[in-house]
Amino acid sequence: VFGLEFEGRKNLGSISEALSPFTLSANVTLIRSRAVIFEEELNVIRNTDPMHPNTRPLFGQSPYIINAMLNYRNDSLDFNASVAFNVQGEKLVLATIGGLPDIYQQPTPALDVTLTKNIGDHFGLRLRARNLINPIDRKTYTFQGTSYDWLANTSGRNFALTLSYRI
Image (cartoon, rainbow, N blue to C red):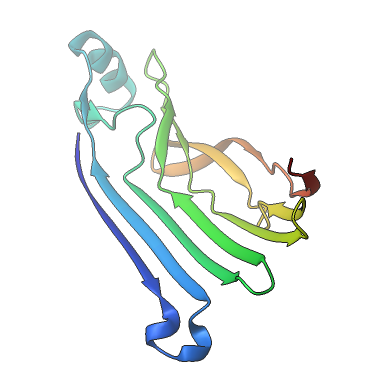
């Protein structure tokens, strides 16, 4: 396994004073992983797929991860808002046996929004909306050059409103 990670954060006030309450941050991780398939297992796989490589990606390791967030902060209103995006590349989630194709989790982007408002010295109100894109979560396999869904579903959007009291 080897990889690189790039991270950045920029207050947008350097573009225009009107944008000074906004901060943009992001990170990108690029990963290369490889696991050698044991010879006995590889021989079984090559009975149905003679050209199958002798390696596969490391279990659960995405080749890339992208995170981005736009944050708004207004101290005079005691208010914060953020929009966050995340996506990970295809990753191996089930290494099968007996020559069956492996199962891969396909990229499933997520978009979340959080609004936070402090009310007086003790109360806080937070609205959180998660998984706003609500994409199809696909786990797939490839057989003879064609990709098939092994499992496909959506997890739904999630909304939460929280009232808190600080002592």
